[in-house]
Image 1 (cartoon, rainbow, N blue to C red):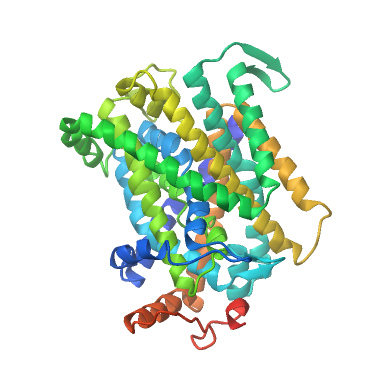
Image 2 (image 1 turned 135 degrees about the horizontal axis):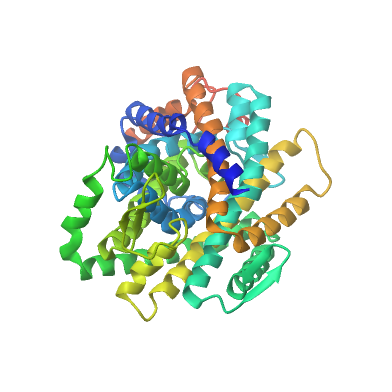
Length: 489
């Protein structure tokens, strides 16, 4: 199973996809005149400028839902894996993909808003919707929808659940082993799996509104608390910063783990973490109640900063300052070994050991708790995304009880991921992320060459903003944007 997953993952995450992620981000950065810099202050203003309605959620709630998908295991275990396999310079490439990816996030989120629909009293949208409406290719929309349902409903939840159970095991020990049909499982992992499944089931049966209300409280709390601990560790070791920055910038193009490893792992884990271009965030963006599609696009661009430049950087600095990491070479040997050889780079172990070394009384327990919130809200976001794509397919054909089937499958995936190895869970997750990124980035590039709807929306919004209007309007037909039926009404 592990060999098959590694083979498929290696094919999906070839250097073609890495180049596509970086190239698309660079192209959209130039085309939008680096909106991620020009509109940075305005992005923050927009966070609190809209309110929820009976059919939609506020911009802040949409940010919280998308951040709950972005801020997850990738920030703690993913950053550790990037360092463990690509060396400290992989952090630099995570920053690059975040900076460039902010423009990609704007484009995909704006498209999600432009082509959203009203479905059974709530807003729905995402890549499947804008692929069909803007490209006129239903088959492509179906392929994306099915791929996303499999990725977010089956593959990706295994990573988040595994991180929760693994961090709990590191924090509290195994507490004995239990023989099951899935093999020998520690009591701690099994207990964590049962608790996560029970809470997850309760919330997903409450619908998107419950998900939005849970995440808007949990996400800011967990992000601020985690960054506060990281800042504390950095301040306590401020003299180490020059050395750490030297590690990050010293091997950018010819990293210690072999040529290309830092770039590959930095981009791979950067995309997994901030999801720019992956196609997940447009689902939450489409659900927001805003006056103009570009507004939510700017809010989503800001979320990439929060995810990678803040949270991932916090993790990286804690690990590098404390030296709690190994670097694995291409031959499987260690280029740098500061921790026991059995320490899994794919797990949260680096991060937990880093915090534990500074705060020995509660470090690893704090990271386990933070990771629970990070990972759990990400699984909630995955459910919402899978549900949205089922709603898209439901317009063409119906399967009796499809949402009940989805919930049962996701509960099973969460349990399975929690009790399996970290490497297998990450391998499955990487396949899901890669397939979605291929389909979505190719689609938004095609849409740019066809009709440029997101760029037209940005230009229209900037003209109105420069004119000093307070109530924005969006007229797609006047801009030459077709099939934006929601905004026509």
